[in-house]
Image (cartoon, rainbow, N blue to C red; front, side, top):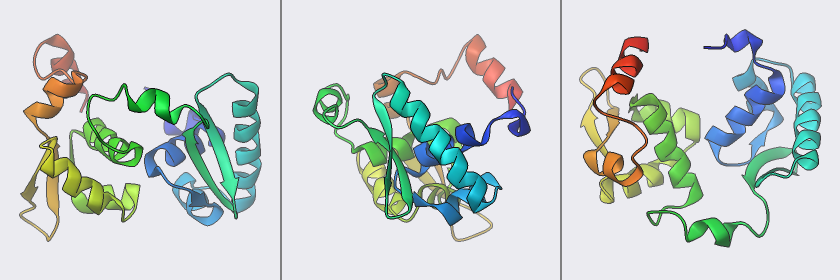
Length: 170
């Protein structure tokens, strides 16, 4: 696994924008990337230029000093019909964050995804993609994936050699 120090600042910023799922200001980007606002601003210019040169479905947007990562204009209708469930892109990103962690405290998820995550969690609970259990040492809840998630998305194996390797790496 690549050392976090070896990952370029533009790549770190891309990851932050992806997980946040909303426009993010320079100060917040700098905090999460552990860089100065000037470094972030220069790296964002590099990232924007890289996206502009590629034929990709995603684009970096900039408005009022805030940056976002989104589907290119015109592609929303194309992918909306392909989603196996009726979840917004932001809710799917929240679900992806939970899936990557396998188990996460609700408070940590809200810190990563913003206060909109509360609505996403409510929707994911209603559609039975996640379950929550009260954390014994605090006011937060543990969020984890349900069997319905695994059946619907079929991305995270629960048994077999790949799951065993994943569990060993944790």
